[in-house]
Image 1: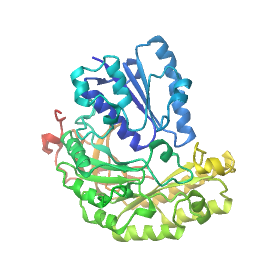
Image 2 (image 1 turned 60 degrees about the horizontal axis):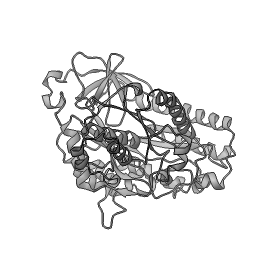
Image 3 (image 1 turned 30 degrees about the vertical axis):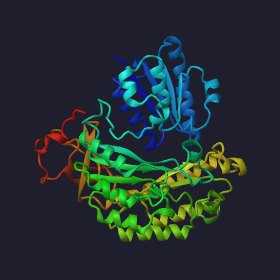
Image 4 (image 1 turned 90 degrees about the vertical axis):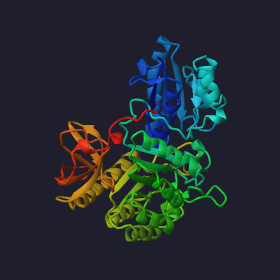
Length: 461
C-alpha cells in the first residue's frame, strides 16, 4: 500500500488545505505515514507570511534532498504560499529534487503527476477528473484521513479563498490570489460530511472572513452562511476567523448573538494602536473606530471573548507610536493578542517603498513588552472563572489529562476515567492561569458511556 506524508506550517487555512489534499490521496487508496521517511509521497505545505516561517521551509526542503538522493522514486511536492500563483520555474531551478509544485489549495499538479507516473488507477483518475482546474480543494465530500476519522473533534472549513484588500505588509494577495467565495451549498455539504465522521465543531475560514460572498453579485453574507451551517445536525459549535474591522457589521454580530451554536468568540486584528501606523499599513480604520467596534461587539454579544493581532516594529514606528499600541491593549483588555515582529515580504508595498528601520533588538523588546502585558491581562480575565462551571468540548488527551476548549476558546484540562473525546462536558474550574485552566468534571455530567455511539466511533465513509 502506497503512503503519503504532509508536513504543514502556517495558518489554519494551510491546515485545511493539507487535510483536503490528504482526503484526495485517501480516495485514491493512499494511506498516511507519520514520518516522511516512510512515505512514497512527501508534500510540504508552506507559509511565507513571515521570514521565520519561510526559513523553516527552506530548512525542511534541505533535509529532504539526501532522502531523495537515496530514494529517487519518492515523490516530493511543494505546496502553498511559497509556490503561490506565480510561475514555479525559479523554485524548480533552486530545488531540483522537488518533483511537483502546487499553488495554495490546488492539488491538481500532484494528481496529474501521479497519473503520468501510472500511480493512479485509470478509473479513479477519470472519476476525479484528470485536469488541474478540476482538482481545486473544494470537494464537497471531504473524507478525513483514516487516522483522524472518528477522532477529529474540531475541523477548519475554508469559505473564501484569497484576499483583495492588500494591506501594505501582507503577502497573501500575491500568493493566494484574489478573493473567491465558495457556494453555500458546497460548504454545507462539506460540513455535513464532517459531522458524519464525528466532527462536532467547525471553524469557517477566510483571510477576511467577513467579506464572504462580497465577490458574488447579490451574494450571500457570512451571517447567511452561519445560519445555513447552523442547521447541520451533529455540529454543536461554529466559529469563524479572521475578521477585519471594516466589514464586521451589525448583521453578523446579531447572528452570533442569536444562533446558539455560534460561539461567543471573535478574532478581529487591530495590528497597531496608532493612526499614522494604521494609515501606512492601509488598514482603513482609526484607533477610535476600533474602540467603537469592540464596544459594539461586547454590547451585542454578552460574555464574548475577543482576540486580536498586533505587529510591532512596522516601518517608521516610533517609541511613542508603540506606546499607543501598548496603552490600547491595556485599555481594551482583550482575551488574546497574537504579537508578531514585522518582517519585509517580497512584492508588498511596505517592502518596496518603506525602510525596515526598527532594529531587530527593538522589535524583540516591544514584542516582549506586549506579551508581558497580555499575560497579565489574560491572567486576570481567566481568574474570574475560578470556581465557575464551564462547558468544554473535549478534543483529546495530553499528558494523561483530557483537554478541550470553552465556547470562548479557553483551553481547559481535567482528569477523568473513561473516553470523553467529542463530548460537551461541564467542568468546574479549580485553577486558572493566563494560557490554560484546570478543573474537574461537574457531578451533573453523564458518564462517557451515555454518549451516543455515533459520536464515539469513526463513521465509515
